[in-house]
Image (cartoon, rainbow, N blue to C red; front, side, top):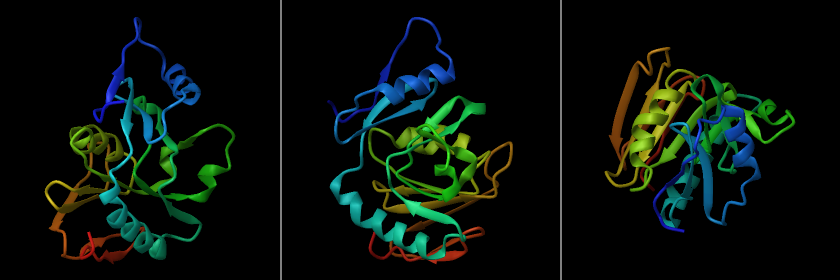
Length: 190
């Protein structure tokens, strides 16, 4: 498979539930994930090896400050946002563990307290535009770890019109993450 995200076109617009079922039944190659982006199934590669250390450092710091009953992880689960007809597999997330009590394979996006995406050339526009719009109405905190610009941006205070707060720092500078996490992220190792 190529490094670029690949949309799968269909003849008639399928329902959100049909697309979710199709993603569930897909035999996605090792190293790739399938998401519902802009009403299409998109298969894209997992992050490059050099992204491992920054994302691990971020996960460890977030887990230490996660609200009680929440977990920080990078496991390949889809979180669904039915109102937007979207389902994403975030690079890193902090969510209420009760999201995994349900049957099925797609967790409720409203259980998320934080999402972090590390940008790549193939997904950068989706991370900065589409996911920003969808997460901005539901998820309390969205972090964009921009590997190309060597910056991390925190979006917080979601509303029906998107996030109301944005802060960007260069790698090496601390980034404050507000409630419900409430900590300063050390980005020196990023």
